[in-house]
Image (cartoon, rainbow, N blue to C red; front, side):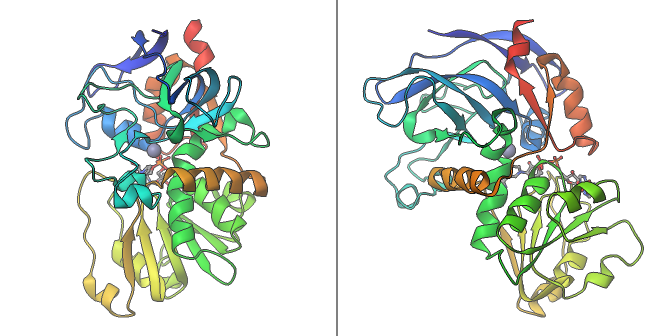
Length: 349
Ligand code: NAP
Ligand code: ZN
């Protein structure tokens, strides 16, 4: 059994300390890889802080993990020792229900998809990416293209797919005006992906502090929602608004009004409290209010290949295990530029 270092927290205060965890040897259809880098997603923070309901502690979060394969089971065909691989939010599903067959494993209903730091089929808690290793079925691992700088690649496994999937589904592309609302870990990938898809990209951020970065990452326009009249000036402008905001104190009605007729407001942000909108703003103009939850495994690989082809990758700040606790506070304060990535080598110090 591989024993590795990991970082865990013990309660909702989310204070991380080093610990040792035991991982299983890969079964016939599984690989084991040494995690090299793990991104910190805001969902880790919502979970660890109990914002989505009680969590199970000790908790080793992390669902943006990349590493190098060191062991393969006897029936594995797609990977070999030395390959660079990544795992996102899921590690298993039935692969047989209507959703799994459609490549939408996140909606598996037999009985459900298994999420990276959650529980396994026997009900035992599982560990995530803030660790030095991971054992996974080969059909839940993705290949990291060589042309993506490996140390930046981990956030693609959640932030990348979570923005790629709705942008593709709702037709971001040439001739479309797309606004990305909130430019954090997800948002800064949404800007790059929508621009690479050929859309005219606007960033709507709550301040001007990210303007130069937004334009450099591919946006043509940048709006600060805190400025008087900023949203009113955008009425009937967008085909698609992708909302990546982690808080719910937004004027959703003003954003619905910023859509053209038939426009789509697609939300991926998951604040813990309900939001309110004016339904008349939605009805007038036949607008669509949609949600989107990560993406399937095949689409995740497609997104990785798309990013490689277009030369785009996350903008990251590298940190060590001892920095995780402080990093959580900085993410919540919108101070990260634009994703913290943990170098698991530092766990040995
Ligand atoms: P993040 O890096 O913290 O980015 C969130 C951004 O929201 C911030 O950078 C900030 O952008 C904006 N924001 C924060 N507080 C705000 C406030 N009070 N008012 C207005 N804007 C505010 O978080 P993330 O990792 O990108 O995740 C974003 C959300 O998506 C989280 O709720 C997360 O749980 C969720 N998520 C969902 C999925 C899914 O499958 N649907 C997957 C992953 C994550 P500006 O500074 O630009 O305003
Ligand atoms: Zn995530």
